[in-house]
Image 1 (tube, rainbow, N blue to C red):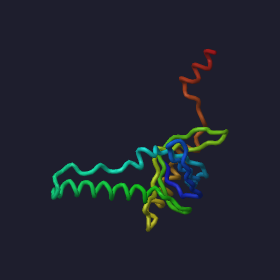
Image 2: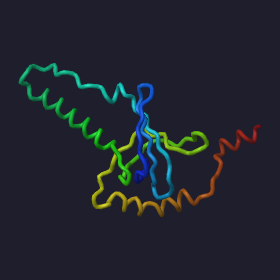
Image 3: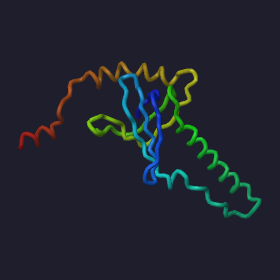
Image 4: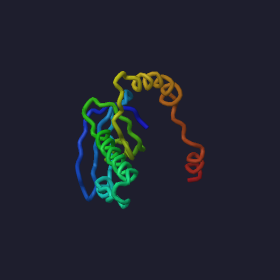
Length: 147
């Protein structure tokens, strides 16, 4: 999970999938993020209500789902400078590191509270993770030694 600022954003459609390509800056560097979404799942219309007319609970539920879908669409529209969270894993594609994102969303942070707490967390991350020398895991080292 990465807290970052959107540097560039573009979307394209290919083979029933929608690709969101983000370039983000998390204050340690700039990296591309790719997030694929299945168009058949994201554009699925809501089923018609099967409850008898006048049943307020069925209308309320359908309306809540519509509002939730609209909120998801709004939170996934990024502009340059928006603060976002990206969830995914690192991979190498064409010799470049990128995040294969499973989800991303815009962070509402009008008083910069989320960004400030991230900045306060970074010194600990540098000490405990980034500044540590790389060590090959013992399991990998043993398998290399066996060759």
